[in-house]
Image 1 (tube, helix red, strand yellow):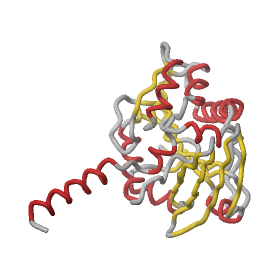
Image 2 (spheres, rainbow, N blue to C red):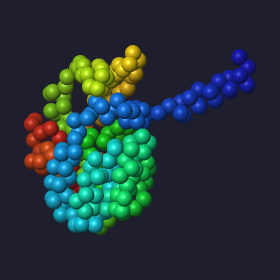
Image 3 (cartoon, rainbow, N blue to C red):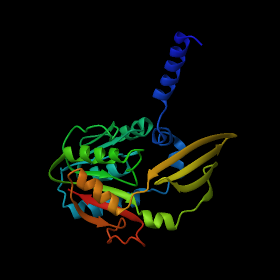
Image 4 (cartoon, rainbow, N blue to C red):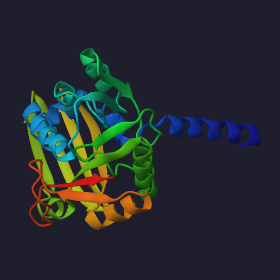
Length: 258
């Protein structure tokens, strides 16, 4: 093979790799994702956001950021109870859906949290295990640094993550779920410090394959990330009712940083 041909093949491979999306860009932009997680309802969002905003003593008109916001269920409620709200997400389809709800004090935009933020906020919400998506742990620190730079004085960052210990203890290796005529075959395992969920979707005679890959992060690791990013963990909660965190029993690991 001559040099010119080799170079052409290299360029082709590079272009394919360059265009390849990461798992969260593919999965979150599908309707299947929203069908599988349809139990994330508005009532849950209202309870969690009411409890958090009361704890943070946010005032009417304060600026808040919901990132990533998905289709905007938390953002909608935050705006409803009086906050100037920005929702952002990497999913173009989710933002296209959310934009129908835009009004005074409520806006949505496409944004990758690995990139710097515009605007300043009294509170930044990173909810429902939307952290630790990336292959490199240093990216987690970069995300927190981006959040920190976008905080107003005395502002807070809230990271709502899974409780790793309970997730390990209750991990179901194989599962099959049918919702809205869609069959999901799900397998989970923990490998090389990642919780990996493989999702086979069967719908209308076609099969689609997706995955979720989240770093297996515990409280000690989160403390390291926060300290490296120049943040202080003010409080740790274990559920959406804001009960104290219990490593063995809590469903969630909810960190309030400043």
